[in-house]
Image (tube, rainbow, N blue to C red; front, side, top):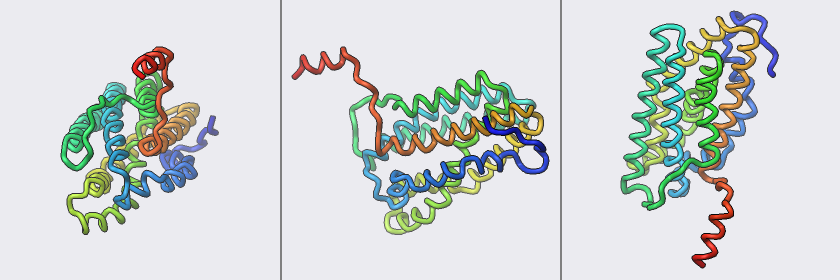
Length: 246
């Protein structure tokens, strides 16, 4: 476990959480998926895979946010998390419109949770349901903050892509996360997590850092799995069925 903070008022606890993920965030910046996404050269099937998995993820993320709202210490805090849950549902709908549009290659396959997607969603929902409010809020934060941080750098290359192709789906997607509205939501989420840390015990503040690190790991794995997917293990019955059809 991470050593507890001696004085939560001397520094923002979210800064400590951020610093604990420095090496992870550097690795995220080097991910091939994000590099190709920013350049606009990511294979279309990889982008489709990402959107399919993110749509499934957002449904679970919305559930975790709704649970977090139910545990919030006051009405204003509950309203923010509940609004964020609604925004996640709306975002999933936008993903669906991209998936059904003409920009991406069609597929007849029914999307199912990848191991990484299911692991991340399960972690967030379980943490929101079973951990104290401060720890649950810390686990939720990377999806806000990491996305906004990555989008700042991706937006630079996305501007060039949009200049040459105003309808490029990658650049349009990046621009939604590098908006003032989204940055404001990130700062509000940070403030709420900082507020939670001030009222938390030393053990809970330590657990908050651990939860933030775990969720950041999942963020990295999630992006990478879109380009380098890890399939579910094949069951013996599925192997037998495939042999029959050969």
